[in-house]
Image 1: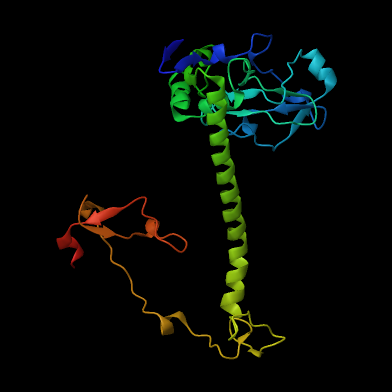
Image 2: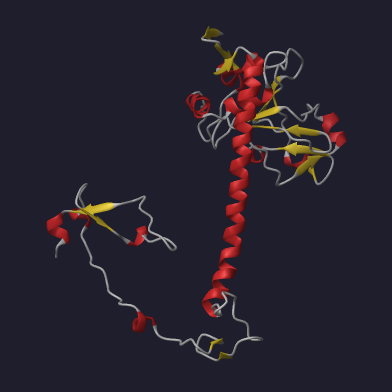
Length: 286
């Protein structure tokens, strides 16, 4: 452990409480033991980057728990996944309304609450430097994983003052909640938009800004279905100027010049410029 400017580096294993099963791998549970009810089995797929993914629920019986000598996982424990993707991602266990265990490729970390704010530790473990260090210390011929021994040696930066740790965690958690709320709002709007577009592009709006309805406005039959009587159904070529692009050899591509819009750059309603190519000016002016 090293200290500097009120912060210190602490190895993961030294963040654990001084009690049994505070830094230990989960249990080896084979398929024949898995059931549809009983003790919840938390698997690697339930562990996201900083969030618990409550899906694909699996269980073992209480009898199997005793037979396999399993270890309880409690709400508030941090579960660190020793497999990709990415290696080292972790989350805090929520209230699950019953007993729980976790699989062998997951490490249980029960934080020493006297010295460390659990939520700060949870945020720090999901930062890029820690995940990169986990990847660098991983190994395996078929599937990359990090051992608990190597995981335990990786250090994070921690303020010496626990109240400062807690304050930082509170700010980060507030930001996370704001992001989740924004993402939920965007997802809701994306679900609403297709229906709204269908109504606007087939019914239109009246002089008061309201959607036309067959009950209040006259409609007529068309090749595209019933449309407002004021509308016409026309072929695309009648209302837009359609032109065919040019075929350019890949050997002409250059780092600078005229940006080239290719098929892979055409997204749904917008251009996607992630993969761009350019043409020299003399090649583009053909």
